Image (tube, helix red, strand yellow):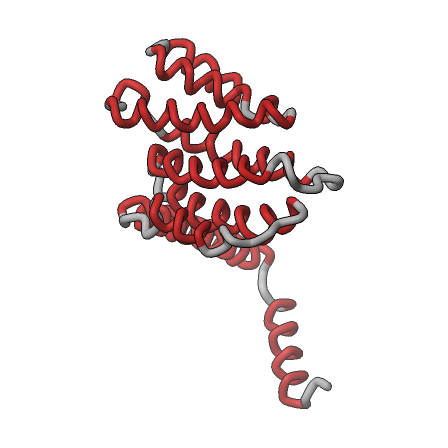
Amino acid sequence: MTSKEDFEQATKLCNSITGTSVDTLKKYAHLVNDMEELRDAAEALAKHLDDAIVKSSPCKYNVSTVENSIDGFRHYKFKKFSGLCGHNLSPILQTQVDEALRAEKGMLAIRMLIPILDFFNQWSGTLDDSYGEGGMFVADWNKRLEKAISLIIPDKLNNEDHAVIEEIMTSMENLEDYGWEGEVDESGGILQEILDGNYARIVFKRARQY
């Protein structure tokens, strides 16, 4: 319920506005717009600073943290992909791998993706996929791979990086046994171009992909 004091203040404000010229009201409206623009600029700057801090900070996750997480449920007897992916593997993608991607550490993210897919492949032929959760997980995994690929500079990679790319491509080949290779065809093609040194084709494929 509005108090007597609030009502009197509102009445005074209305009276003051009523007695104000249109030009003065327009001037204040302009100031309000300026303040909104400043607020939006400040929010954008804060987000930019947050992103810069994340990118410049060491990523607290790595291949070992991923493997340790997997070891925590390696002994489980999964029956459905919902248990394997939704409750166990997907959270690793969403926390550990995504943090590496936010920090723009492409090769680190690729290294982290390998044990995740390897463990998924171990169970792929034995689990119930009646709701298509296996395919959805592969698609989510591939989105991270696409982002990781977009962050690396092909001609700056060394022999160790090339070995990692070959390893992840081997893991991806196992998806063919269960009909999920279509989810990773584009990514696999770009990785092969990187290994072959066809950088011009990589630029073209990235342009088509994004």
